[in-house]
Length: 250
Image (cartoon, rainbow, N blue to C red; front, side):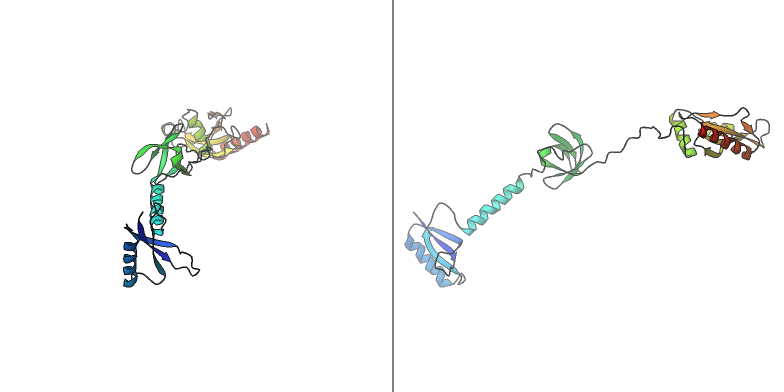
């Protein structure tokens, strides 16, 4: 059996106050009381503190020991990674997602396996289990363009006709092709299909001829009319409008 000096808060009710500290490990009560009296005479503590001599127990039931225990528990909790992943499967990381680790570091998922993901951070890359990750940003999936038009064969602009022609593997609007024939797009589209182009006159380089074209649904460009060549732009444009009107009514 041993004794120790305990520091307690004074309780007006007469009951022992809360322990705020302890010191010493004395073999006899007399030795402990001698040191306790010396501390009281020195006035090392405030009047709100009561100095007592009590039996020392194995259990450290003092404020100081409790504080140390809490600090150690806090340190252990900080050392252990937080389980941020929802075990029900909600929030499972996918490729391209931004995730946060238990230490606050963020990274991007580049590969995913059954229970872990390969995370690329600014410092390192490694396999991390799902339970140690938290998804903080989802990668927005881009909608794939199926290439189908709502109104097949109906184009709003010449740019759409150019794109459809190129995507289908044709070369009507290629720079080299248009340069060879001296072609220019003059007007259209009319009715979503017909437009007018001009080219160098085959016998008179100083003049031009105007031709009505039709853009097919598959992107191919056709020359229309039994007499496709017009001497003026106005005549070709009127012809294209008339053909487009017939196509629309049909």
